[in-house]
Amino acid sequence: MRQILLAVDGSEGADVAAHHAIDFAKFSGASIEGLHVIGPGALPAEDESVEVTGVSAHMEDEEKLDLTARTGEQLLDEVRQWTQEAQVPFLARVERGETAGRILFHSDMCDITVMGAQGENAHPSRLIGSTTSRVALDAIRPVLVTRGSYRPFRRVLIAYNRTDGAADALTFAARWAHAAQWELTLVTGADYEPDGEQLIAQAKRFLANWGVHANSRVSIPGDGTQAVFHATQDLQPDLILIGSRGRGSVARLLLGSTSKEVLEQSPCSVMIFR
Image (cartoon, one colour):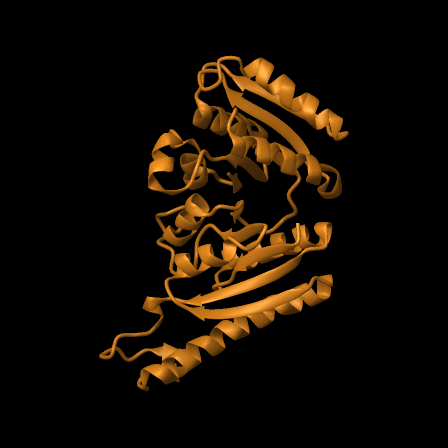
């Protein structure tokens, strides 16, 4: 791992994501690229009078944009302080544009993207923001969506099936288990993978070749989503690693909604692989 993309928007979720990104960077020697996007809705309407960081919004659009950009730079400076304390290389970017689109653009050039489940304008009734959902489901490379308060990942659940994404998740876990001191559990759904016991046994042998031990369970009955949620209730993992079949709306339909449902409903952090 060489480059980690971190989406920064000033929310508590983004702060938690930053600390997890720093953990990965320390373990791997990677650098972090912090990205703050000034989206189309970042400026108040012309007839609005609001306070933006203590300054009246009655000003020209370019002045408003400059003020918003400075706010973004301040948010990135805070993350920069954390990375300096951890001795992790950090590059800051402030860009204008459609938020998810800009994050996706940069995610193609990084090894993983890390972002909070909810941004600063998230609706309280939703477990995941629309921008995060789109990035996680459309990005080519792995995306880590963090939830809850920060604590290092320890209990890691691998949702395993016969997709390429699940194989990538397994390889990722094998590479990180020792360095990050992960306790791994493999899970699959018997209805989703009829030969689940054999499949899990193969995965455990793969991990054993890396010197990594994993617990396992096959949910009977249960499809992929049910298997993951049953295991989550019992094991209370810090992180779920799950594969996806492809990219875009058509691929999501082929996915059978498993990774999408886990992403949207899981109480813990989720990392999606393709």
